[in-house]
Image 1 (cartoon, rainbow, N blue to C red):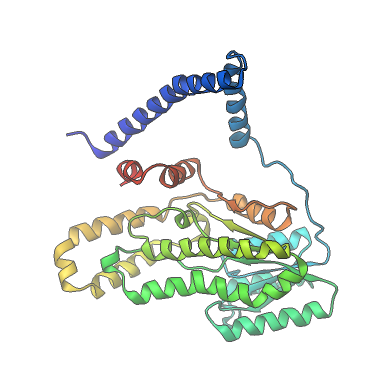
Image 2: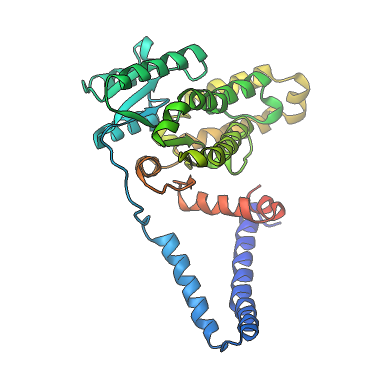
Length: 361
């Protein structure tokens, strides 16, 4: 019997051939019929196909078309989750561009390295604030602090970047309800809590709300249900907010990063080992018996393999967030990810589930 990877390769080749045949023969025939209905010469079909293909190539292969930039002077940005990863790098990046940055750090009061390094910039435009997005009191205190500082200057709160988040893994039957609640509390409710607190300021500035979701906010995967659920919800929240804020001139964008595990350190072998021990020790005996230790260890080995995977450079994410903040016409969604993840996301969101399931699971 053929191996699963070989079968997937055959199916992908077959799908490619099928689409080639359909586009090569079916599309011209369809366009010919359409041209006849319009009374136009059928020889125009070839030109139409070439034009459509050229537009597609330009869309995929060329850099983002400039859409004008807003003035940086007098604008402030609040970023959550600035202790490490995207948030820390973004805070330094936007500060360098000339923004006043309010860098929300979970560990500022505990002497966290990220908060210390940002404070060591000794800049009037870098304001490090203690911010646990799960703590209503801290959120309100941080926003009051922002109001006070902005009230003493001519700056406005132009944007909020909801970046704070946590990740975890585990099959559904091994994952506790407390884990589901915790991940959603940070990734979803933290985003909503901070957004609601600063929205009056953002509205008055006709500014931006930028929510960092994930490619797993558009597609699921095994052992990632707590994370996927929270990120799907962030996507939905962002869509609803975008519709509501249109009347106020506020633009809402979603960032959907791919695999940046190496760059952010969000998943390490120590984290996998600790989580694996917790999952197995807390699992019901019936679940342990049915799944078996071998199956469990295979999945944990898979998660360990992810620890050294992904893109090492976060520039693509920083550029997309910056564009969402600075462009006069920002995109609704940005998807900074490797090509194979982008293709997978398109397949899983546009093709029938039966096909994507067969290809990837």
